[in-house]
Image (cartoon, rainbow, N blue to C red; front, side, top):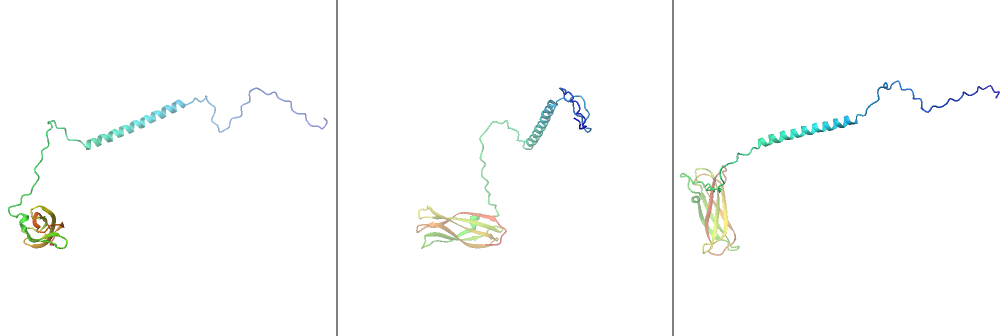
Length: 196
């Protein structure tokens, strides 16, 4: 060993406990050991959830109260139950100045079509009211024994007071020979149209 190399340094005995590394200059200064905060976090989460749930329940309760107030039912009657009564249907009485609408309609002819056997009637309508009116005329066609065998109808729109019109009320369906015509109903309603 004559090469003039220095001898290696003597080996240092290894300790059982490692030497702690030097802390970083940016690390927080060492302090007391940190306690676990799991219990605190769970308590805060549960408490926050309960507060939110309570707020939702209060909001729903307030909304339901306002809706219930807006659809308040009438007070309940203490009267004993009784059968409902039926009112008489409202029937418009013809005024003394206005004649009955049936009086405004006259049958001019009553004929049976020889080819198809359908009955028809020609009616003349004279507006006997004081206003422009429209008419709906219903006809019934009767056999020789007076039994209804068909029906028909006609209409007049916007007939001036004192004005007249002739219309055909066509029955539907074949009828026997000798069938007669009869006005079954007439409705007169005020109208603004001047068409007939």
